[in-house]
Image (tube, rainbow, N blue to C red; front, side, top):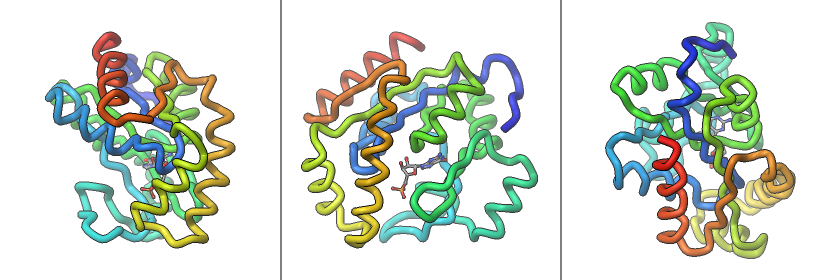
Length: 191
Ligand code: 5GP
């Protein structure tokens, strides 16, 4: 990781929490509500899911390409989640900051910790599912992972949820509209 410019942190909003908590959906709604926010498009070695588009949902890279990007210092942060790499691209964040946007990073807990350490001025939110049962239900319902991957994600979620007290805010996503309003209020008050 490399810190460039003092005010990057104040332009970063980190939305983290377990897979299936609804953080991507919430972030997408925030972008629709207010044009000053923009989503960071991460790079990943995970295979695209049906309907996902390269450069829109993620930049889909081979492991070799991802490792080359690590060597070239292209990431603000990166982490291995489940069996794949995920990383926030410096050039994507910088170009959006240059456009005057506040950047929302939807990333896992490891990445969120790195961003907070490197950019203490960033705002961090943890999205909680209402219960473990509902989390499992949501992961099952979206039908994007097989059973083994769902079990892996639930195990990771249990560890992730233990870390929620280190975030600036914790939002429980029970009702989507209510969670979107709560997140929007929090980030507009800070920005
Ligand atoms: P998924 O495979 O469900 O798209 O993502 C798995 C996890 O990786 C999710 O928690 C997602 O938010 C996280 N993730 C996505 N992009 C990044 C990133 O750039 N960095 C980190 N650290 N995690 C990410």
